[in-house]
Length: 352
Image (cartoon, rainbow, N blue to C red; front, top):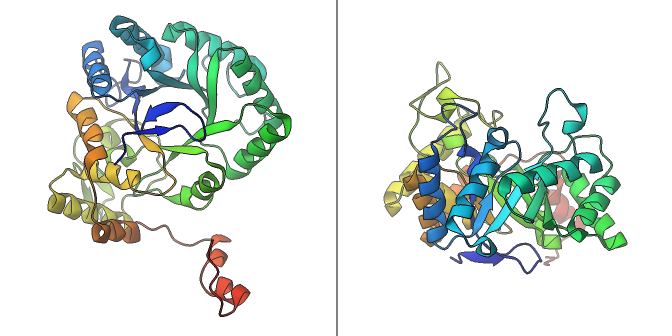
């Protein structure tokens, strides 16, 4: 399995594993925060392995994540060898209405603040972290183009945006000759596959890259938890029993989720790897997925994520994981295959 790709349709060469520095800092408390020494060990282990993609955000640990990334990279040296992505959208000052959102004013200010915290004069990839539901797409894309032309940002992306917004952004950038969206970040794992309805087809059509966040579903796919189905309780020590999670909509108590977790454990045992490694490797085997963002609070965790690049899942077991975790059909996607398509094409078989 290849370790590096070009980001979307750009010439930027990145590792398929990006390190997500959400644990770098002390502001978020137990379950999310680690010491500076632990952060240093993880950071250098990741880069020493040959990986080159570091992902953070202005809001992570209330700004401490960017600060630690900047300090650790300055200590290590070699800024030109590392690709740094960061994000903005979230409010950084609850007393200031203008501190949050995706408008041009916020963008310019947050990029300047991120550059200062990261101790660098450019950001390789700037993501809009979330859709603010109000800023016009035209303003966002024109502003992103301005930021790129200023030299402070090299490439741009979207995270957690609706599909229609992504499509409009893509068309606007082509019409106006603006900097296009090169990559998107969306949640994707064995318990959350809904991006296959809109976003992976979009990536196939346009060449936009996709990096999956929460590849282990906040730890539910690590194999470390047990489940009391009657009481709907997660048993074990870890983030989902201690602190907030980024994807509370995942219900691990459904029949499908439980079957998926059990199948993952069995496949992992059969292949001689941890469930976390197989969960990550499964993502890397999926079509139109560029890579994944791996977080860590221990060196061993980032080492396992890196090792997943070398895991080949046999076709029969891959198909089993694909089938057991397959999302249910929904409107209008159920019309895009099966009887309706047969009715459209008659007896003819139409390929790509």
